[in-house]
Structures are given as structure tokens and as C-alpha cells.
Length: 615
Image (cartoon, rainbow, N blue to C red; front, side, top):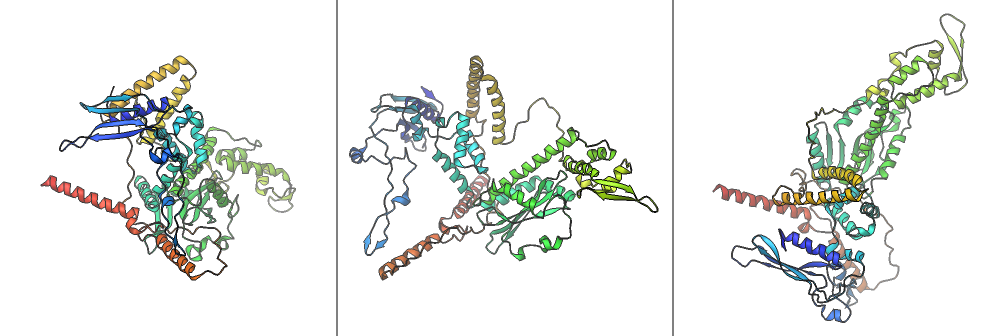
């Protein structure tokens, strides 16, 4: 049997092991001994229960093996040399289950022959029974793999702050049942931890880089930052181009509230909320401010300065509080600013979706009128559906007044109110047979014409589909196409066989294209811009909780000196890094410092290579 690559050989043996009921791993490898040739020429794939167990296992203790566990917890196994009145104690070791060793000889060896990997040895017999139940085989480390498509779904759900149990339930529904997943709840939790750690030290840098990207795509996008003396970001404000256009039309009624803190830095969230022509709450901007002190605000936002103003269809803070309650469903207090920005964009999309739905109703449907009055028909064509609903409600209240001619010069009327909610001017219009509402009574901001429309792209049909630009978009587009195909082919055996054969054929074509270098495995990650590498995260907010209780007994001098030494050691360990302001490490071991040193070394290496090429 011959394979094109060593990865194909490993995949074949691993799939064989999963079907047979055992786990596999890489046994040993051999590299070329020729001078100047340091490439792989042989590799063995063996059973996970290979090799002897040793004395410890023969006594029933077994051996610690990374096949089942992801390494040893060094913190738990570290020896504690804390003195306890002159004696030394060791911290208890973490007890783990051990993988059994049966000195199994089953293996497959492959060697490099004329740029192909040929099977040279294949031993099928095992010295132990196979796994008694097939569904248990998936817990071997060799079979616990998260496919790329599942990883992208996990990443998407993680960015939407779904908990791990909900993510696992969703993946189980997609794959049939939870027991068919080739990974466990712990694997998903580890992936989420890795995703969180990716933005721990570069939170603000990644956020500002994203804002710079948006500003490059749309010059109308605006953001501003405020730095402290340590070059840490303490305040942030951003607004996109469409929102700035909306503000010009609906700036007559703006709300500003800071009752919701949304991130790990305890920075108050200050949404700038307005009302569009559909009477919906819209976000006109967003700010993360350092605190809520008097010096932080402009006095025009204090309620005492606009108590004489009129705000239609709302209370002073009702709109902001309603939006904050929606944010609480999607944003956690310990989220990073980068994650909050992504959630803010999602909430902005939900606002736009509601506005699109209201715009569709105004353009494609006809409003239900209460009467046959011309003024009501005119209002139904002019106002949006939400604004016209208010007008129609007022029209129904015109019957709450009784109108009589008044004695005197000119045309005068006396109105006797039967309902305090009735509107006088509409009653007079109806009684005097006014056929058209004067322009001065029609406010443009409540009309259908006030809707801000985005520029439409005039695309002509070119006879072929447009290929998406990124891997994620291409993956989503292919999933939609294949889901439609699967929905049609799943109802019959013949149609299923046709699709299965076609999938195998397409897989072989893609594999040939990959080997020829026509397929890029995945996109590279984004690098932080040079201007933002020096941006530091704000200091983390203090953890909440009950403080530790103080000792009441009188301690001897030895114990007091011991506690003092422990406090000093703990203080040294918890000192914040002078580079990134994060706790838990010093500057010499700072990830940002290591990244900068690596980039500096890469630049020097590139300069050296360019110099050699020039010479």
C-alpha cells in the first residue's frame, strides 16, 4: 500500500484503529543520515497500549500517559518547601487514572520510496482485547479531534457568549446525537479558554486595529481614544458612517445613560440612543468611559438642563434602559473590549433588521384606516406605519368631543371634552371638512421619506456566481449549497448513493488540487499594527467577594515570620508586569515582550537575507 504523504498514512491507520476498537499513536521516526539531508524517511504507527508497563504498573499503579490526559499539572505536583515550624511538607500530588500497557506489538511502518510512502511492516495481532463497546473508542486521544467546520461553529457560538453546554447540545443536534461527537465537553472548554487567552494581552491593540480597518474601508467611520500616563486606553468612542447620516435626521431626540458596565475593566458603557421614524430605538454611537465622575461628562447631559424640552413617545431613560436589558443577554461583565465590540455590531444588526422589516411594510403594504376622511388617507401615505398608528388612534378619539358654533365675530367653535385624550385640532379639521393636512403639521422626521437608504450596488448578471473572498464566507456558501442538495437526496436510497459517489469524486479532485498547490489550507491571523503595539489594556477591576477572615488566636513568632515570608513571596508573584500591566508574570516572561523580540529578530533576519541577495 502506497500513500502520497505521511499525513495520509497516519490518517489511514487512525481510521483503521477507530473501526477496529483501539487507539493509535506515533511510535518512532527515523530521519536521513546523509550529509545535508535531514528529512523524514521512516515512521511507525503503533497501538496506544504498546510497550511494557514497568514495575509501577505491575503493582497495580500504572503509568501516567499523555494518551488519555493532556499532560501533568505541574502546579499540583510541585513540591512545596514552605516551612512549618522547622519541618518541610510536600503538596499532595494530583491523582490520575493510568492507561494500561500490554506490550502490544500491533503497528504499521511506512518508508519513503521514490517520493511515496510505502507500507513496509503491518502487524495486525494485538495482545489485548479490543474496546468492548464501539462508542467508547472515541475517548482515545488519537480519535479526539475537532474538525475544522466544528471549530468554526464553536468559535462563532463562543463569540455570541453561548455557554459550553449549549454549544455541545447544538453540535450534538447537528451530528445526530451527543455520543457521535469525536470530542468531549472538556475539549470544547479548552478551545474556549484558548480563544479567550488570544485576546488577554492584546485586547485594546486588536480592537484599535479593527477600527483602523473599518476606517480604511469607510472614511466616514470615526473613533477616538483617551490614554493615561502609562499609555493605557482609558476611554473609547466609535461611530460608523451610516449612523452619522442617521444622526443628521433624528438628532432632535437623543438619550445618554451609563447604568451598565460591560467589561473586565469596569468601564461604564455609554450608548447614545435615538428614535428613528419608525419609533424604534437606534444606537447613534457608543462610548466606554473611565468613570462616572462629574468631570467626565458635559453638563448638557444632566436632566436639569433639558427639563423644559419635549420628548415624544418616551420617558427620559426608558429607551436606554430597554437597550441595556438587551445588552445584558449577550454581554458578560468579564468580557474583553474586543468581544464587546463584536457583540455591539451584532446588536446593531438586529436594530437594522427591525428597521428593514418596518421599511418593507411601508413600501409593500397598505395601512388599515379607521375612517374615510381624506386627511387620514393622506396621513397613511405620508407617515410610517408606527407613526400612522398613533395618528389613527387620535382619529378614533375625535368622537370624544362635542363641537358647537360660538357666538361672536368670525368662525369660532366651542369644544366640550368627553375624553381627556382627545386632540382638538383633528376634531376641528373633521368638523370643518378639511380635505388636506397643512404642510406645517406634517413632520418630515416621522415620514417614510426620512428612512436612510444605503447605496445599492448595481450588479449585472454575468452568467457566473461571485466567489466569496474569505475562507469563512466560502465555507458558509458551500454549506448552504450542500444542505439544499442533502435535503433533496435524503429521501431515497438511489439519490443518496448518487450524492455519496459524487462527494467521493469531488473529494479526489480537491485532493489533487491540494497536492498541486492550488488550495491554501487556512488564512493567516491578523497582526497588530505597529502603531498599536504600545497600547496597553486598562487595569483590571478588583475581584468581588468576601474578604478573608482574620485570625483571632495569638500566633507565635515563628508562625508570624513564616506568614510574612509567604506574603512577600506572593506579592512578588502577583506584581503586575511593567510591560502589559497584567498580573501573574514579570516583564522578562511577558508574551508581548516575547512577540516584539521575535519580530525584531525576524526583521534582522530579513535584512540579512536581503543584504546577501544584494551582494
